[in-house]
Length: 297
Ligand SMILES: [Zn+2]
Image (cartoon, rainbow, N blue to C red; front, side, top):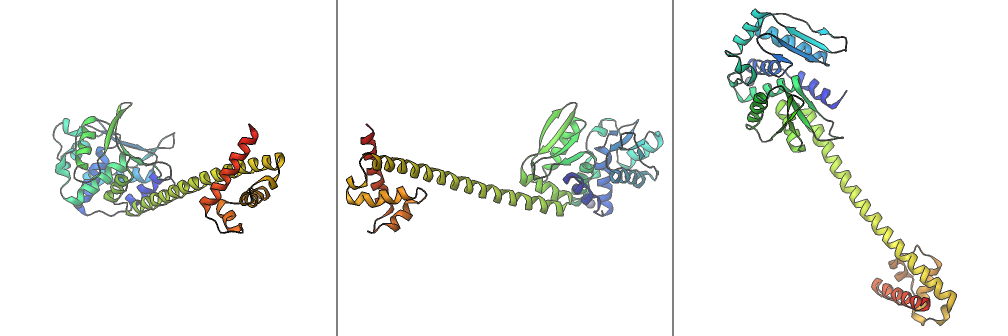
């Protein structure tokens, strides 16, 4: 099951107070495929959502209807009976045709009902991407008026959606992970909101670790490159003039590097017979490099 379907099944498991039930039914109907004088309908891949859509119609009008499975494996609920549609609009205090394309806030009475309404809207037209892949939650809305009203509704809360027009429909979306977490929580998907947060924290930690590993790998690569250069310089000195030609304080360090190019500077510092700092070791390597450079001229 996709993350989006999991969110929806959590939303479907929430039991509503009567005021919220009304708001959720309204959100679900308004944001589905059609909500007009001629037709009230939904087309969905999720049979549970088709069922709850039928339940919403029945809750508001008393009319019992069932989903039809389409040839494409989707579920369709379709009402074109004028009397039933009129009853429905009456119950939702919808009087003119314009208000069928806007949110009638009379149907959202209490603070609790805002959550229920958004929940209904999300069940009808929402999707959320798995946070492992991407941070994205959206409502695909049929008209600009509805998109604007939905954005206005979110003004009640912290998260601020963006909107865009895409092939005839309007998308109201969130890209910020904190916002998505909030929207999930507002709708009542507490479990999924926590899972979302958990995934985000895990990803953040993983990114930090990766950055650290990359940083350490880069340091290691630099160390190896430096040691290889030192080794090459010392091999040249050995070949041209021999270690005995070097001043005594450089002989020991040259032999150590020549014997093992993987030794770190601090390891070499510890291995030397006299006590010397890491920067002292580096300084001596620099002198060896200079000698090799002179020999190479
Ligand atoms: Zn309520």
